[in-house]
Image (cartoon, rainbow, N blue to C red):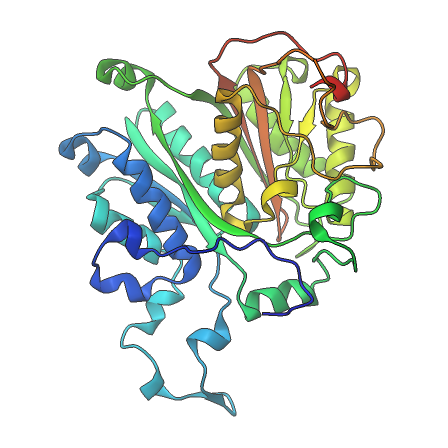
Amino acid sequence: MDPDVATCPIKGFEARDFTGRFKNLRYLNRGAAFSVAAALQAMEESRLDTETISRMGLFVGAGPNLDLSGECPEIQAGHLKADQLKALWILRFLPNTATSVISSLAGIHGESLTLGTACTASLQAVGEAFRRIRLGYLDVALAGGGDSRLSPGGILAYKKAQALFRSPGDPKREYAPFDQARTGFIPGEGGAFVLLEAGDHAERRGVPALAEICGYGSSLDGHSMTAPAPEGRWPEKAVLSALHEAELAPEAIDLISAHGTGTPLNDDMEAGLIHRLYGKHRPPVIALKSWIGHAAAACGAVELAILLACLKASHIPEIRNLSQSCHEGVRFVRKPTAGSPRWVPRWVVVQNFGFGGQNSALVVHHRGKSLGRPTSSESV
């Protein structure tokens, strides 16, 4: 690992703590291991019977395994030393390995989809699962993903792309998406899955819902392999598609969970999109990567899970370290004023944008009691 690069690792993680003894555990790369662990934990809490599990869908967002030096330590003149490799070493590079392992361990045999759409992958996995349920193809689906780019190969890839946080100071005090002084993102890792269920199916089981997904949108920039189109036309289309499916106007949105990586180009595009789309309504905007780093393909599902936990606790996290906003027309959430009343949003947009011009958005309806709207970004 490059000692000069700030990262957000998960310490003490062992996939075996979630899988138990499992002979194919060795074929999970670290990102896939996070995916399997999160999926199994979600299934453990699902209270679903065996027959329902066997029919349910499985939708997984996966990232590439960039741990090249760790997986293939002996490469000379372009040739691999075969005797150093495990018999099925290819499984550590296939995107659907985690999906296969989850199916095997959880007993899921229904419709499945593995998405490799960069930083939008796990949010799109949730969106695609939502669509299958809404259209009547499934009653229940497990959706999410896991990823880790904290290997030497992953860090080198982002470093070469000039996407990483660069500062001689303390990243815990200086990493701030949407700040004028931002320089890039801090890579993180992890995994999360959510259980999606048709409303009538959940009611028959007597299971209360944390929230309801009401709209999903996706699009492609077709602009650059790494940089977003600066005018943000196609990311805006993804958000508008999600709002249209939810039958909502932008003015109905109470909170935006932004992609908010901290890279100059992404933050400029996203801030401009938010200002243009929501205008004078100015819903508060949070950026969870300021707390957890950028979990790459897993970021959508991880941030959705954190968002749901925050809403349940009536807590809206400020954007960490934000000092000088990059766009004064956008209402970024700052530290709350002492003594301010608690505020619980009902309608939330979650959005992710990734390499290759991948864009996705979800409209989430939180079922908790709404306590009105904040009066300023300082009092959220």
